[in-house]
Image 1 (tube, rainbow, N blue to C red):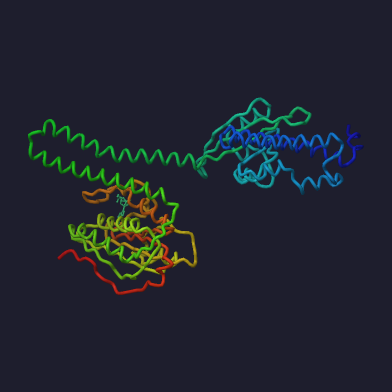
Image 2: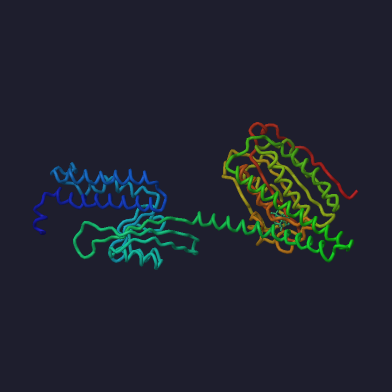
Length: 475
Ligand code: ADP
């Protein structure tokens, strides 16, 4: 037989494995399409069209070969051509953005497309599957497929070094080869990590939202029962309970308003705003609207050195909400008679916007909660809110913009927070392609800064004026 092979023309000898490769790759392509169609990632018409095209390619190739005209125009240099001009089905599998592997006898990786190499961190050499994927159920399914028995879908998860959730589709493929091991295992990997994570976040969010609403509801229903029963004729108890019920109802209203606000912001986060907003004017309006709250606790609310006419690109109502949340927090988390100061700066680069003020202390905690993509030509208008409250420990800073996060044991008065304010700020800032950062030192205070792209039309109008105190409350 060896002699027969030697007697064959060189092109024919080289053409035979190539023909086999083409058929194998066509089969592999059809199997990949079938797996994608089976997993719902490919529609039935697309699957049929792809499968027919690949099958037709294989048949045409065979017919040409059978009629004696080898489709290779230069059979003598077939091995080189094989490297230089890959076949259509091979290109198809190579270009697929989904990891596809062909596993041979002993669990050796025979082929892996670039997506698979990147996904599994495979180098140039292709070793054993078990050295790159230590998932016993996957390896077991591969062994079963290599025996030609059946295919399987195996889900697996990893937690280290990174969390990931993957579905592995494994199918046996019979090759046109003689010998005891004619089967290969085709493996297609589907990365479900982001959908699983989104699913979990949705579930956590619903659980948190219902928990937050259930607590005041339970308390309201308890008071209603008491007022209907034992405390029916107790005037003093009724007054006290009605007061508590009012607080709980206000809390529920705030929670529902914040949830609605968050979902509105999320819905249009991908659409950048188009309006122009004068930040200095906006800050003055927010200060005026919150000064009665500050006044009640004798807190001195002031506008520090400000650049006037800092016009940024934005949605006025949303920017009002951002400044109101930050200033509201500064008042809420300050002790009575403390000072809260808000400043506006213009014409900052991204980096100077993030450091738009002196540090509170040399070792204060600092964190960027969200930041825009670097654009050297872009200038930003900055709002900075500083308080002299209890401050936030460094370890809590990364969690500040998480939904429902509240620092334990912090005093915030009767208007206890919902834990949604800073999450709303972060989403609005993202929609505006701006930035958001925090600096805090326990016992010294906290500074929150937000910045937004300066509007083209308002850029020239910006100028600096002297500081001005807006509200002095102790009078
Ligand atoms: P909340 O409605 O609870 O204030 P936020 O999302 O606005 O929710 O804030 C999240 C948490 O961050 C607050 O519960 C509080 O613990 C902390 N925090 C926010 N702003 C300040 C501040 N200026 N000083 C101290 N702690 C703050």
